[in-house]
Image 1 (tube, rainbow, N blue to C red):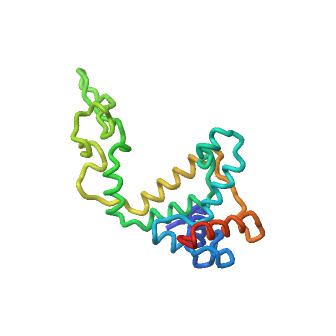
Image 2: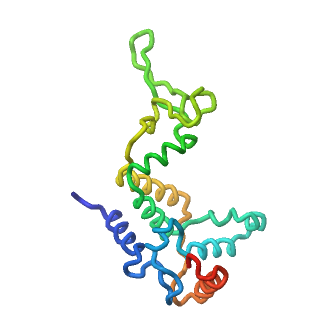
Length: 205
C-alpha cells in the first residue's frame, strides 16, 4: 500500500506525541509527565494550558479576553495530533456508541430520491434528521436514514483519521494553525509550568 507524505508525517508526529522520546515539549526538566500518562487519565498535558495562556496574552479584544473566548482563536499542530491520538485510543464500538448518543449533532437532513409523474428519478431533501425539531421522533432515537440508527456498530480508525484530516483542512482554510514556543529555552514556559505545579500541588502535572 502506498503511503503518502502526509501520512508519514502524521505517523512521525504521533510517535513523538506518545512520550516515548520526550517529544513535543514533554518532561521539561522533570516538571511534566509523558503524554501517555495524560492520555490514560483522559486529561491534557500542561503545555496545552500554556498555549491558552499565550492566546489570552496575545488577544487584543478585552471582552473576548475576559470571557476566555480567544483561547479557541487558534490551534497548534501539537494539539491536533494529541486529540487524534486520544480518539484512536477509544475502541471502535465505544466510538460508535458515543456518536450515537450525541444524536443532536447528527445530520438534520438527508438526500432522498423519488419518481416524478414522468417516471424520472428526482433528488429531494428530507428534513427529518435526528436533530431536526419537527421530525416527531422519540428523543435519543435516530431516524432510519441516520448512519447511527443501528443499535450497535463500529467506527474504525480509518474513519477517525479521515475526519481528522478534514479538520486539518478546515483549520488550514482558516489559517489558524500556529506555532507556540515550548522549547527548553523559553523561560516564560518554564515559569508557567512551575506555577502550575505549585498551584495544583503536583496533581496531574
